Image 1 (cartoon, rainbow, N blue to C red):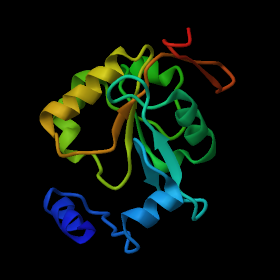
Image 2 (image 1 turned 180 degrees about the horizontal axis):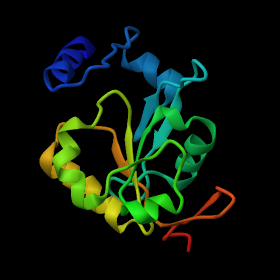
Image 3 (image 1 turned 90 degrees about the vertical axis):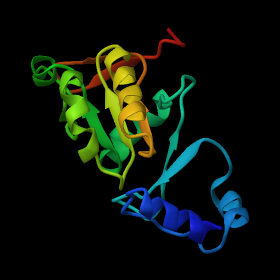
Image 4 (image 1 turned 135 degrees about the horizontal axis):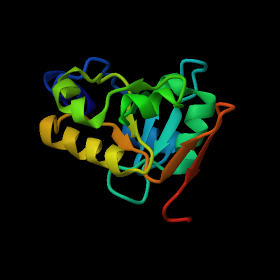
Length: 165
């Protein structure tokens, strides 16, 4: 069935489609079950796992932090804050597409890696996630960072998970 699924993914517009020839039982044995997505690492052959957060469409905060620190190129990171906010600090690999401009650019978003939206509070990034669901529902592996995100002058960042406080 994986070959049929791969064919369907290509028909939906995905360009980086692979078939796990050993089948689902071997996949579960190697990577486990769950709401995780394997992302090929540019630095190593070992995949980076994306773990879903508690809220629909969100990414687990700890998983996000590990990816940003260890393999930020494995995701398409989109900062949806206004340009002046972005210019005052963001992630090195992030691109700035303010939420007010996002709808016109959704059709150009890549399909070859997961997309994660970030903002200062999780509100605009959540809005961006749902905008993608409305405009391009076939685009999978889209997440948003929920929580309060602040950047420090030294380039570091802090995330306050709304659930943890």
